[in-house]
Image 1 (cartoon, rainbow, N blue to C red):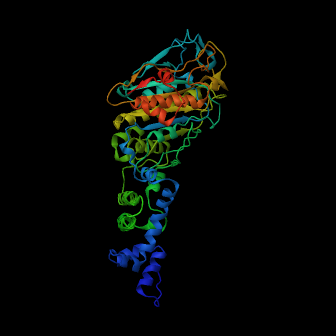
Image 2 (tube, rainbow, N blue to C red):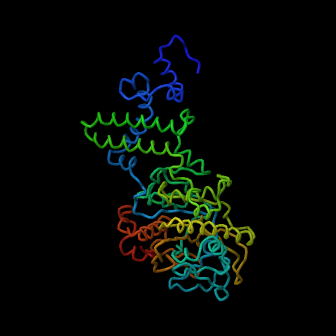
Length: 479
């Protein structure tokens, strides 16, 4: 930077700082310690402008107690299992893979409207710890078996939730992100990862970090602007100075109401920044776990914007507690009008991802929950022969999947199905969690809390939605 010889040294230093030339300043000066030295260099004004607004904005939106939760909470300490949601956008054949039964858990007389033909000719495969029924021709089951081990599936339960929803729309309130967040699942250094393309049930979720490449995760934790040109060591020094300053500012407020709590807020928030910028990998890189990266077939030569790297990065960071709920989405699941060979191949792809998620739970030794959704459903020509092409949308015959894994052993489940199908090959609209998509998601959320051993939290998150008698009918998965 060209210097003006008419300026004093302090004025030159301040000009350097104002123009973002902090690197030059750090190289030529010892670290300021006293308040006078901070004032002389201009760093006092600089750091105050950098740290105070974001904290004050948080405090102005909520009380100190809520702010403490927002700024200082560590989600890694949550007693609730991690949650992944996987959405097949468009209206996949969910009920043509897992086979829904009637109220007595017996096969319907026919599945001709959903491409499986007469039940007399239908071959079943039982899978998972609770022997969930799948069509033997299920592409999803084939994909799950391809990418997960028998041991993993033996410690997993699968429950199909019979559900009516709208076709081909993101307006179905299929997201339970906000419910899980309110129950206590939050990321320690990142928000929810990936945007759930569906509307939220009951509550408004926190804003997620949209992840299209691994760089989106590292960028969210990095230092932006002109400070981004500093080395990790220089960034760490800068935040260490900021930490001392923030503590000094907060201590001056001790005499005011809530001052001691405010001091803690300043200190914990800036400590996190020091840790993050001073660490090359603050625990977000899925390649640091060889077994995990093997599940997703990713390595240093993989394109970090590839689907497997993105999905693997989201799952890895959610399982580590770095992020909140993880949301994965795949398009192209609007099945009607496509040849059956094409749709069956997409089923296999979806199953492979489900298997990879389950195997991720296993290799990271994490008790975790997976929900698989789609927009509505799909129907075929009514035929007694299995394998017909899908010809129309059919949201009345929809299913979503609840899948729970525990590395300690078999998850307990009392059933493989929530709700049931009628002889019209549609989800019964009179079941307690039928009627609206939101009530269906309330049922999924109740099973998630039960799996966590925390069903008692249901009423505090969703008061008066389902009564105790309703929960007795709805809960199928247990801790």
